[in-house]
Length: 291
Image 1: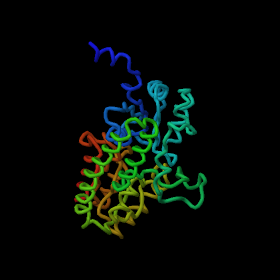
Image 2 (image 1 turned 180 degrees about the horizontal axis):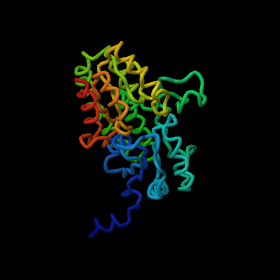
Image 3 (image 1 turned 90 degrees about the horizontal axis):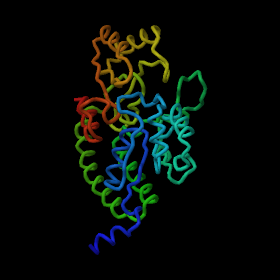
Image 4 (image 1 turned 180 degrees about the vertical axis):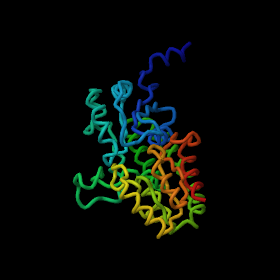
């Protein structure tokens, strides 16, 4: 009875979990990995959606309105859909100038930064390529950043967050060695993509992306560009087309018909395919698909 009375007198904040809204599934998985039972995670975008285009539905507005904090990918990947959600939610905790707002891109060295930005270059990202989580080595940096963020929000559980981080890093570093071994023989391999969302993956494992089916980022393939691509494939003989799951494969299939090149679906996030249940299975798949 005495113990029950003590529990009733304790502040409710000691039992409350942080309600964290995150933009993509991979961020949700990392946040849950580090936060454990001390965080509740609300993922805004589904893994099989095009990450550039998310409809700001009322249900998503509610998730942002009720959040204690928000973690975004950044590098303008969410530029078309997250700002309207934040405005409509009216939650000061999730505005970009708040201490409870985290932009992961600010903690990663971005690649493919354009020399100039205008509409003639298509839908380019002025800060650099935003798909940095697809280099699995970057995932450790992201986990560290999220640990620091959660500690700042909830210092009372800092030891738990640090322990969870160390446990995750130990497991992840073993997988990094495994994936490196699997991909060692693929170094220098020539590939084609639909959209350059695998830039960090390709750089990590030494794959050479010759071209994209999109003539420019966000621009649908034209007949002229497709014919030029068929000619390039016949000359350079890349191994395959690495195709995302959210664009139509119609043009890739036409190119395959003309050249015989293999098409490999490459998921970009958790749940992008039914078999991708977590971050480990994402990279197990990506490195396995290249075998």
